[in-house]
Image 1 (cartoon, helix red, strand yellow):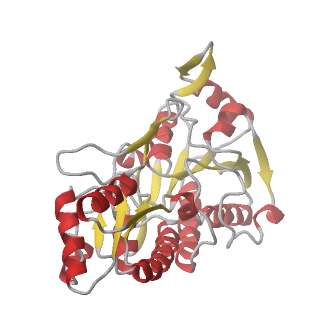
Image 2 (cartoon, rainbow, N blue to C red; image 1 turned 45 degrees about the vertical axis):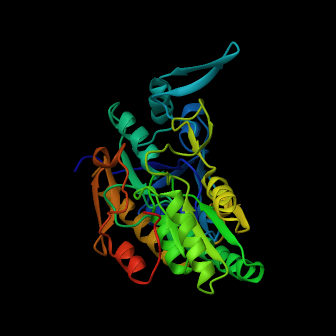
Length: 363
């Protein structure tokens, strides 16, 4: 089994989401109970690159179970194998893994836990190649990490989005409007599908099902003719029209994932109003989906994930990421989940359930 661990690190990579602090708490308290010192790495991999770390004590991780965000900070622009640095009037990409290894060793770390999504795990694989001992914990509101049925943060985001959609429902019905609400989710439709179905949305657009704008317009007109004087359309940011392209808000060349999706709600609302004459509005829910107090389900899941990450550390089963499959907590190689996206299967029970109750997917 090798030597006993004495000092481990922990970082939160990528974007923030509810439940991160619950994982930090679980890993740190379990480790301290086992006589292991825990070092918090600030701002994701950026803390490893810039050597910004601090020892965590019991006070640091007490009373943070219900706190959103992350006490360690996060950064989604710090892939050590491809780190963008300013040079002249532009940016250059450099491999700074040697510096990360140096800081890892100088801090006396025996291993560390990375909490993040597919981008964070992809970066972890590149560091594992350099001999670092890493255990992963899956995090994303998008629920798109391959290999696990659920990621913490998703349940809270669904609740936030569904509550917003419930409020949109009342104003849409009052003013007899078509309301198009754009949700996050990137290239997977889990968030839009779950929140849309939970709130009784009339139309749900997800990346997995290309939509026909003419058919969406016809659906809105059909509803108006049958006494339904409003329509709620939920649009996942990664949805696109049949034969068309993704809606890209901007490109950030300093980020490992430079594409920033956005604009689908504005497009759909504009087209519906232009083609049908029905008054339409678009709403982008935005980063509110990442914030807030984690739901009890996310707190429980994050705590279980954090504890199992500690168990993997104790067992020296490095290079693995915690997962939940069919209700059971386990693990799988980090290399198996890196650079992969878990999308919604077209025969998924949620899609079949939605169609059965009259929800339209634009196809």
